Image (cartoon, rainbow, N blue to C red):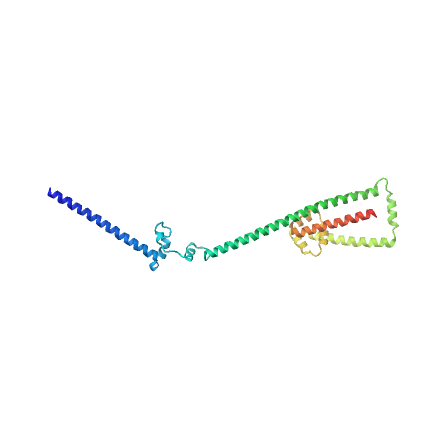
Length: 261
């Protein structure tokens, strides 16, 4: 019985000794951890900074790391700006640039809409002028060739009886006009042999004489001049188109004047 009690006492002492050992070890580990935490937090010897790359993403240990400066954070993240202030200033600059770009785009869109409206308005006017010219041409033919009109011999006699000096002046003017028209046609032939883009560039250089440019384009076929118009600056092409319309209007007024005289 006594031996049994002695054995139980020895076991109890061993158990208490083991527990004490474990507590001492745990205590030592806690002390070391606390000491490590203090060293990390105070960045003694730069240990906190050196271990930051390894511990910065560990949930608990990252709380023991020393406070990081803005420059250190930028360096770690490979940030393209030297400070948050620089980044904010850059964002503001980009916002201003975006606003300017949007305003320019709106201005261009509004101007383009105005030019398109002007072209549409001039197209209606051109169609009306062409329709009137066709009616005048048909009227002239009917005046000369209808059943009740004087004979062709009468018209021939009339032109033969024109005052010689007047006829000479008219003939000179006709020759000059034909030469001028031939020059226009010749230039038009040269231009229309070019590619539309190159032709547009050449015509845009002749800003000093819009009337001459309009006559060159009018002497071409519609599809040829349209291909060149498509490659030109919209504002300048609108000016040329307006000049064409003005020329048609002048011609129309001249026809009206000749009919009333």
